[in-house]
Image 1 (cartoon, rainbow, N blue to C red):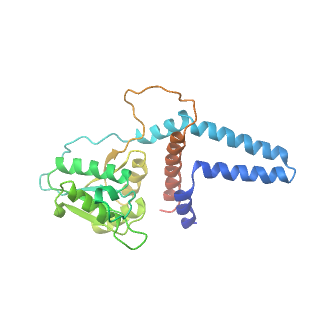
Image 2 (tube, rainbow, N blue to C red):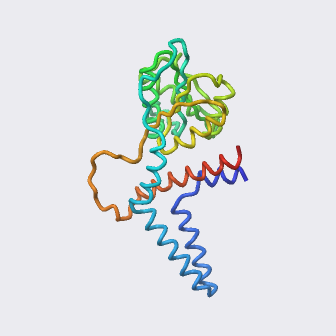
Image 3 (cartoon, rainbow, N blue to C red):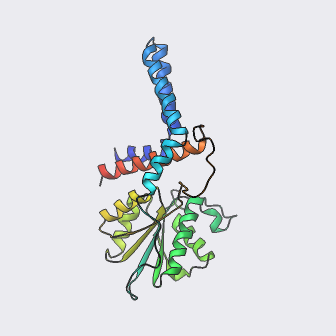
Length: 254
């Protein structure tokens, strides 16, 4: 069951769900259950309209992102206190033609940039990069460390967690290797931050949130046609679904 939820969180998208409903509608219609087929098609159209226009995806994403504000620097701390800045993993492509900054995905690069910004504002801090390799090759944590060095961080101020493949595993690995009393700053996407904070708190840490990669921009923008369906809104809804399934998995199997 745990494996199923993990696979579902990784593979399920809004379009996949709509496709399943339409396949069921086809078979019901084929076997003369036309009323059921019509209901399923109608539900599919309603879900598509709700999730592909601006209103519902932006509302749900904003609810998640508003739970934690960007970090205020500098944070209060003891001068001799070691501060951990854990930049959570996201994704990378191990292409040796490219510099490490280009091997990191845009999400991972955005997280790393925020981690470096915080690191430069806090003396006695270390950046922790995490992420495994599904192919047994150079891990994302190692590529992120190389990228941080390219961006000016000293190698001895970067540590790596090379085994975790999920946020829950990142929290457990950090808890296994470091004292819970350390001041800990979590850097991840704003939409992912509520789940990440819950997982690290469950491991006994008292983390400080440093959200980045905000998907909802509250600054000046053109109104446009919010009622018009777009792939961008579908993509945003997929992020919301991903977080919902991740929270469900974490709450069921702690």
